[in-house]
Image (cartoon, rainbow, N blue to C red; front, side, top):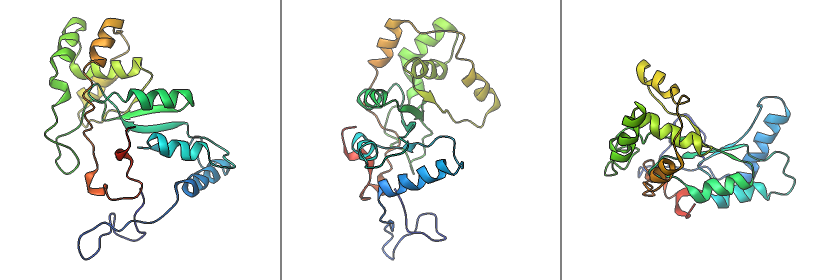
Length: 204
């Protein structure tokens, strides 16, 4: 989603409405392809693209480089199975942001959604392996082939986020965690829902 060029990060009109920049996703992708061809980027990808938007790029006439990744929200309460399968079919890696849920900042987040890391299933599995619920959630995503990018400012938590490669979840545990899916999107970006390319109106 693009905004009107200028000094303001999110420019608004006199009524407080965001001023969007009308641009074509395919034209933007061609600019990224040019960056890759010029050696300015090793790989190029997209973020928050739904299936329709991905197909727009993949079916673009003259496509030179397809997206290698699609960065989207993905965690045990929002497993994105259909989007994950579509991306697998096209060799696009899902990069999961907010893999531990997210902070309870009402500016960005639906704070009425249940906090992921208090889930009893995740905590029970964590006790079995002497791991935290966060480590179990990260391991779950890794075993599904999802690249995770957890965010933390705390050194101990950052260290713990790396300590997920010394255990594996069983098939049953994976299924138990998959069953937690509530299709709960924490990061709804509702402030931009009137944007022509707002991606979350589609099923996936």
